[in-house]
Image (cartoon, one colour):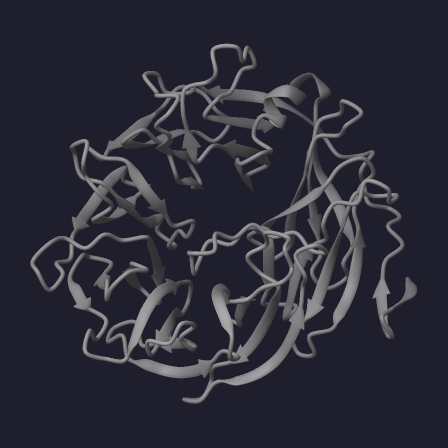
Length: 435
């Protein structure tokens, strides 16, 4: 154990020894899912959605959802949708159900349909639409599952609706209220971000809802001037924010976090800390309430983990910082690896933090690491072969990553026809593992 001083705060961190990198099993490319045919170069198509069950690796495709063996291979089943996938929740229920927003058939169709997928039975269990005050179908931007409720939201107007897992309508946001739900986040709880009033920068509230009624059980008003809010965890409740007049100029969608106690009707601030975009790495769409990547909250350690931005002049390109949610102070800085970035993936089933190591400039492949959320010790789980580096690197610009069952899954979310002069291979998805 080594003690380091940072900004006047003493941090307890490991010295990085004994990380098991040399003993990590070498993984190889097991399977490539080919890019769909008939794509347009000028009209990208969403193929959002990537999940794993105990039997399948499941990937969104053009107007369908497709299931493959965990170790890769020919498609075992598919769920036709009739329209393009607009948004896919990364959340799975215990019985492998998840929610999507998708389009109906037709060239001019919009994102009006909310559906519940059963990835165990390989079915679209139901699809629903919600009507606006003029009788037209609402267009939705996001959908999540929280507390056993499917909740979809739209960032424009009073759009939003909720259903039970068996498809029965539950509630709609109150259109007569001065406050508008702009998005929901799920998990064990259901949390809404709302904006109230008609000011240029309307105040934002974070509300923990009763999933069955949509009524607020707890409300916390975010600081004045907050322009954007992203719920990165509902239990514990943690919200990433960005001021409306952000002067960071880094392009980041998050510049700080608030940990909130929502146990009472009036929420209470537990801690608040800054994560400037030029210093820390995150991947959030400004308009989305849920769906931030690269930010991991560990309930067992009551901590938030975030990678720093790349610094090619340092001994390791970046590192992972653990923030104590009780105090908002850094609790540890976990070293990265030489010649490559670490990107956080999420939590494993046992609660450990997972990170993807990008391919190295030296020509080596990437890999997967686990970080113990309490001891902060890191251990390499997979070390990808240099022979497959080009396929792996093709996903690093905008791909999605997932580690499960000893395999690394990589997939695209938006696809278009390749440039005719581009001779490199670009699969829709790829599976890496030991076999």
